[in-house]
Amino acid sequence: MKRMFCGLFLALAVSAFAQQQPPATPPYTTPPIFPEGTARQQQMPPDTKAPPPQELSAAQVEQQILDKLNHEPDLANTNMRVKADDQSVALTGTVETERQHDLALSIAQYYAGDRKVVDKIEIRGQA
Image (cartoon, rainbow, N blue to C red; front, side):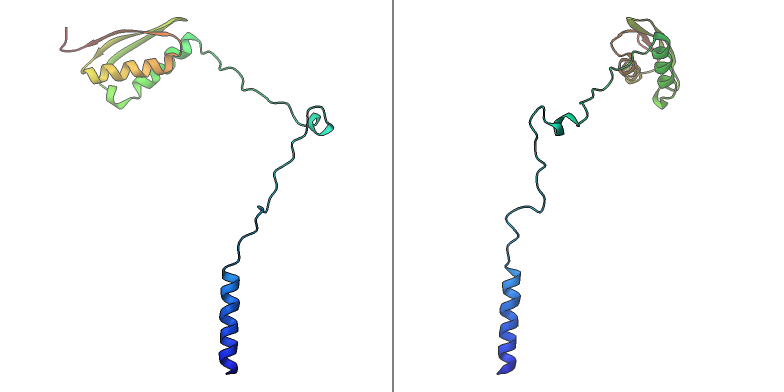
């Protein structure tokens, strides 16, 4: 009888602890918001903005595009030239396929920034 009472008591205790609800408030608090002009507000650093993007020179853009074209495996058997100025980037040369043509143009457009891309690429087999 004693064992049965102890077992029943143990079962009730375990079920009571298993059904406990978590506390209603989270274990953390939201930091206070201080009104403008208080001492606490004045100690906080001002917001900073990202610096404006730096414009690349025409020579840098030209070199960057040429490097990407020369290192692209799909453009290995092509003859591409790049000429850039402040307003435009001109691509000249020859490629084998339309796919290579489109790839070269997309690389140039990506690195040209605001410059206009002038397409003077010839596709062999198409005249």
